[in-house]
Image (cartoon, rainbow over all chains, first blue to last red; front, top):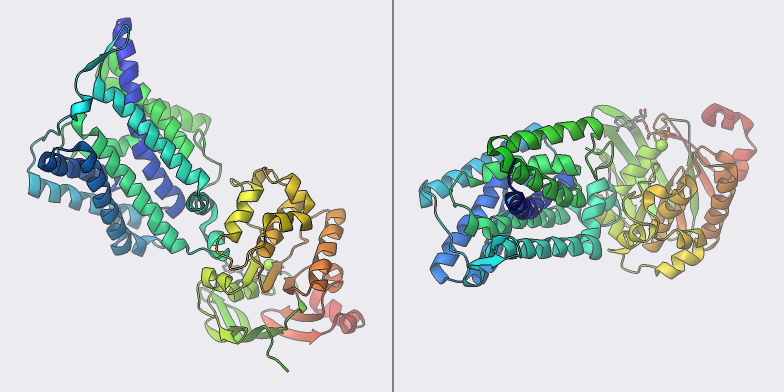
Length: 291
Length: 234
Ligand SMILES: Nc1ncnc2c1ncn2[C@@H]1O[C@H](COP(=O)(O)OP(=O)(O)OP(=O)(O)O)[C@@H](O)[C@H]1O
Ligand SMILES: [Mg+2]
């Protein structure tokens, strides 16, 4: 039986991983819900964000600048990917969409490998995030703690965009019935571009924020891609609240299982997903019958 | 004489290889209410979908105020002032009543205020914070019509607005439809409930197997039981 401090510290790790998974998965689920495309390049886009962070942060030494420039870079990547590739596949079968986004992910990964090599790179923790905080009975790395707050703020910003703006109104309506949105005079294609780019930026920014606490390497995204799939299945496909709650649940499952035996953390995650699929096939927040 | 507001000339529409509309022509004048009647599967919904641009006609022309609109995407056609209220109503169940209305108003050049809509449909004001999926069938239909009104659509295409509703609610909606007709709204309405449709239509077309087989006034249709029986099964 693990000690209480270890469990507590793992619960914190679970929260940190959970908020990150929530952010990564919300990008994936918004794209899936609105566009009907399961974006298999999502993990590679996470990785691209981490490399963007590495490049700008090492060149300028500024974390904030790196995030801003990196986000702008991801926006360009997102727009180019939608315009140049993904939009040609909206009307195609899901298998084709999966193949083409999976292929795009491989291209991104191999380009990163060609430029930066296969070795793990490190991104320094920002100066204001160094050290360790004493939380009463627990010592916890400062940046990890700050990260929970930063990501929570970003999730809240995403919530505001989705639930308090016209753009969000269009996105939420598009998740339900994109054709009717068009009949009501809205250029759905343009809205799709915005949604896809938003999803890509979300993936990229997740990679940027996580870069200081993970080794940056070309294949780093694949693990997150798989976990994000599980999260959106748990939360309900296409549901933003589902991605947030599912992310937190998944983060805790992984971290707490690791306290007992790290080898079983992913297995436990799949087991919970399988159980949920039996009890509630549409996921925690999904509506029945939505594709 | 000025040209009709909506002019449909010899359109042919297909679903894949199956030919559904055959040289369908019909006109709707400014401030006119036109009923499009016909049996199940006659092609009424297909006609409205083709006008709205959901389905592109393979040939023929559709003009709104003299401007061709066939082949344009639905969002452009909507911005020119045409609005389909679909048979399945297509209310956004996850959005509230008010959000459904605000969404509809987003791209309308001269949208009504919410207040004006709520004066027209007091029931929707009471339900404005309810999610679309919590509405009754009648309320959903009101909201579907309200979304067209808030856009101040020049032509409203109503697909079976009374379908599946209780008689009392149908009476309410017929009253609303008459009110709209009296206000001079231009409406093309498809209905199975012939009596209800005839009570506010100025002119009637009958569609049979994708062909327009008759055109006339409600009076002449009512006066011709044989015609009603032949094409509408009444
Ligand atoms: N999506 C579709 N794909 C293929 N065929 C279709 C499709 N929708 C309708 N049809 C066919 O087209 C014909 C006309 O259908 P339409 O829906 O226009 O009829 P309708 O007059 O509106 O009938 P109803 O009164 O039942 O609503 C029917 O034979 C129908 O089976
Ligand atoms: Mg129909």
